[in-house]
Length: 286
Ligand SMILES: [Zn+2]
Ligand SMILES: [Zn+2]
Image (cartoon, rainbow, N blue to C red):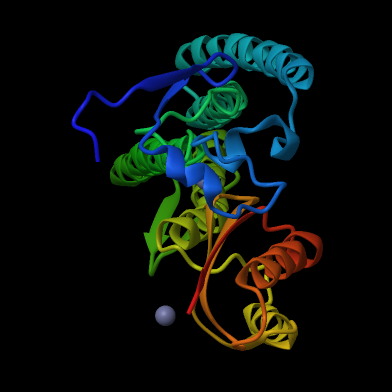
């Protein structure tokens, strides 16, 4: 090895710097469709990106309109709720707030999907979606908690003044008094809002725990790889998702001695792409 400074090659389209370590690398056989010169993630390239920049700006505009509209309705409801001293109206305003947050997260995710991966942020920014979803779940829980606390407090407070409200054994029985209806609506809406976060939490848990995405039949996938000509066995098979729909696979494959590793890799990659739509596949041949 020479001790001179490693030269850097500037690639305009990707705006990344790649050190040219040795000329000898060019002699190694490389499958033709794999671009060696790119070290950005496959998920940051346009061909696998479901949204091109035109679609992206379209969705961004739509989402911005939704954010502004629900924000306006929310402010009106909040003012109305405070003036009428109605917790149910405030609960609906809170529901609109979670909508605003949801649309904002979607907008943010659409914008972030256009950001290029860098050599340090090599997977791109797809998991921002998961972090944002976790944040919005926490927000829904916090707001619902405050509203439930306030509703129970008001019910208990009303009971002390004996306005025909009874809280017994967790069952609220009440005369159809408007105040009580208001409070019961608040409780029902809040519990409903919290229950909608359960499926979100399930998705977040699955992605953060690197579970195999539910749409992928892992046993079938393993069998399929083992059936490929030249594959003797497969182990350390991992399938996980960066975020919903961005699936990654890695595995170790022991091969038959006479078969070319490159052919095996090509076949496994094709199989994963065509059958399971996994575009990011890493295979170690042993
Ligand atoms: Zn990648
Ligand atoms: Zn191994």
